[in-house]
Length: 277
Figure 1 (tube, rainbow, N blue to C red):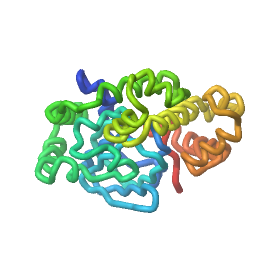
Figure 2: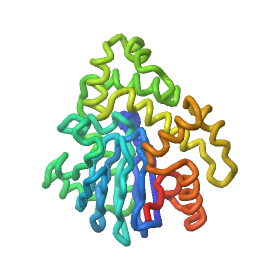
Figure 3: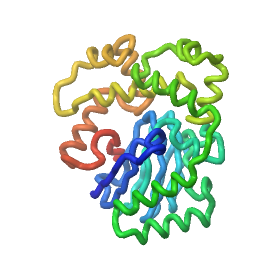
């Protein structure tokens, strides 16, 4: 599977972690993506894919837009997939959306629903006609730059999210609003508008993501030490959060990660997605 990515130039680098191109046969027909402190844009150039978020499953032919999730997603891939997209910071898609981010949390929509049918079709045609992945990424960057707009409250949300990230989510919510000089209600409202979740939920997801990224599936793991290092009260609290975010116990999660490593060593997608089959 071919995966090409790069960080966009300013000002997009303050919104988007990376632009990427993906093509090839997926390692598994279905992959589970645990919640992460990020948003996602996919412009699909191949056969449709499916996403199950909660109890609902939908097919996406032109791609999808999704703000920060609160639960795991199930991605169903065609035998060969091809797409261009952006992994955005939690607030990163807000300047490109015509609706509050909360409307898309755990409810991915098609690109057409966000940018319109003709604009989406024209973008997909230009991407499909590009000379290669790097030209595609340049075209997507130009499109996002063209669509960038001023977004009220973005500075507040971005700064507060940075504090949460710097402390890996281990920060009292009251401390955040006090430091920002606004009420907790105002801060929560801005977060819902631009990220889709409250500061408390972002902090919780950020802490869980930090714990997951600290796991080395190839070596022995001291779960108690890992839980304490991530700021959980105890190992039981950590286990509860693990099941809430992934549907798996930490031990079962490790088995699934090791299966991915064993069956597809060095794969471009290894590290976050999990086999769902």
